[in-house]
Image (cartoon, rainbow, N blue to C red):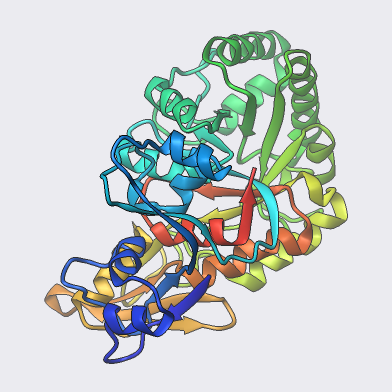
Length: 424
């Protein structure tokens, strides 16, 4: 894999010729529009095929995979344009393998809401070990809020991606609720009811594990939370299932704040099979313009985490989105709009703005002037920033990474991931 940064005057044809690849595939892989418009500073992921195959009449993905000793999932990953679908056209060229130098292997999880576009989910599932539909919340009486996850589970199984049940303290209004967490962790009758419903759902729906995300816990509940996780893990293990939990991005054991105090890194790790470090949202909707996951901030969390948690239990949280802030920023007033990485690139193209790259944060950004003369500041992820983050998985010896979230299309996320890792 080569990450090419577009320079002034370059076109897809010129870039493709310089690397000896087909311009049509380069454009399709990187979601370049039909008119070929590029922004200066935009990244293109260039992958060089080692072996290709011309589809003959009557051939299927299964027959082609079998003849080359590979899998349908790998063919999907090697050919983004297939979008996780089976349909082939005689004469179509498929990439069987690339000249990629993998740096490791790992477990990669993605989160998505049930209303995700089916075609978008299908395109991304081959790049994921597991899928966590978001989310089973908790009712006022301590039961499970229902989730319409049937279509997602069917698609996951079709693409051989393992489904994971996501359990959180989200209420009917979609907010994390400290009181409902308190109820579950302190009232054992309620806890019994919730755990029973979780186990029933796991068995009924065929979930292979549970991922727990209780946020905004006071420090007084840290021990009770770890005990709850330990109890749930033991019961899941009897059924051959695993347990994960999400952790706020702490840099010290006694970090103050409601987001952090209820999460004891060592206790939660000891009570689970894996933990997701939520290493994103430094740049967020109500905050000042900055990178969503600045690399020094991420590293600070990781450096602390490995002092409390075995690295093999850790999943790195990776953002798959950006933000667009109207300026000037006024604390308590300004609200950034969450956008896809692809939308950020489209904005740079639309306004003919060069994308810049912050070498310290390892994140791309730019400014543009929108309708009415309002200046905007955009921070997002591109192939460079994603590569910098994903390489941390191998550097620290982590189990893998979790992507928040799958709702917005950005092909470079998956091209970079598949270029760097053997996906379990």
